[in-house]
Image (cartoon, rainbow, N blue to C red):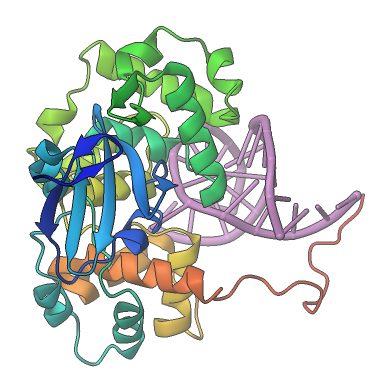
Length: 301
DNA sequence: CTCCAGGTTCCGG
DNA sequence: CCGGAACATGGA
């Protein structure tokens, strides 16, 4: 007698050392929606329901269990991750402790690349809004039992749209970048599956050849989709956290900072990055304090 | 109304 | 190599 959720048979998957809500809301992905006691959303081209029940994960439909376990990276040993961190690094220890159970996902490559192209200079809430709107307007509608979600639109689908179509989804100046990258993939000028097989440096180079993909977005794709767990994306939050913890006096250039993190954090630097990122956001580290600061750049012509 | 957001690209020292 | 500036849009 199998258990039923939303009209679907469920599977129970062992998931120790895992926090579903923390992971899905950590800023790696932007499309999961709270539903009942769990979450629903598209996992590639199928809709699934996930719910945490202690050290178990409830998955519907049941035959999505293996795919879900892979996506959520339940096979990563977080014990090994923590053990790899520099012993003397108290800032990282503190962040890691606050993010217990947070895992790095294995996202579909195109979905991850496209989402982070749209992410530049946007707040997480707005990235989510854009992402959901693109799915609902141009993605395939997915149904299973009582569940519904939308797949991320394929490169081919985007290739048939216009820049105006994308600007209508609030993409702004990112619209031409997403469109050009989608067309490069749709026309087979670029092959993400092939890039996925390259080493980290080569893959980063190939990604950065795409319009709208710089060092930060490239590293997000390396980390969140290609499984390069040593990749370390540096954004404004991470930069603030790094400066507070490691460079209190001077301000290193972007290149110097990247060299530092690559040598300091090691094999699982990506996990260190995600922990520092999420911890900084939760504690509101360094958000420029309003009004107290001396008025800056108040130049009027 | 002002400031800023999981950046990238182009331009002049 | 490095610092600045432009680029859209919406929430705080």
